[in-house]
Image (cartoon, rainbow, N blue to C red; front, side, top):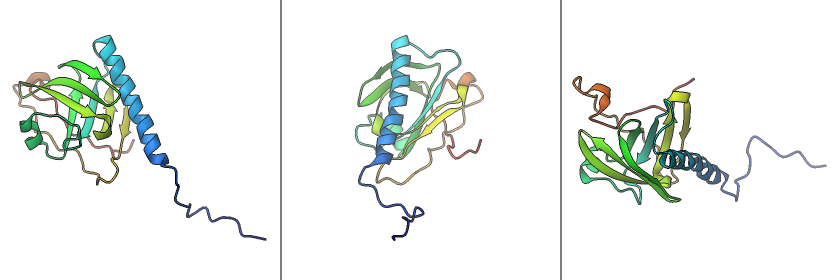
Length: 162
C-alpha cells in the first residue's frame, strides 16, 4: 500500500494557471473600459483608478510623466478624460496633468491594479519577472484646485483589509 500524496507541498504545475487567471481578470478591465468607451462616459457614480508600470514595453507617456513616475503610476478616469479607446492589446486615453493635456497608451500587460471605489471593487495584478512596487504617491491637490482638476494621479494601497 502507498502513502497518500502530501497535499501540503503541491507539485509545480506545467500549466501556467496564475498567468491564465491574470489574463482573464485583465479581460474584466478591458470589457469595462470598452463599455465605457462605447457609452461615451461613465455610468452613475462609477470612476476608476488604474495603476500600471510606466516603463513596461508598449506604454506610451509624455517624457515629463515618465520622469515624474519612473516605476508606477495611477490614473483616475472620472470627470476629465477623453478619447478613451480600447483594443485587445491596450487602452488609450486623454487626461490632464497639472492643466497640461496628455495622451496615454497602456498595454493590458502593464496594468497592475484596477479599482472602482463607487462599488468597492478592486483587482490587483502581478507582472511576471518584475518585483511588486507600490504605486508612486502623487503630490497633494492644491487647495485652489477644486475637485482635483489639476491632476489625475492618486496613490492607493491594495493591501487594505476590508
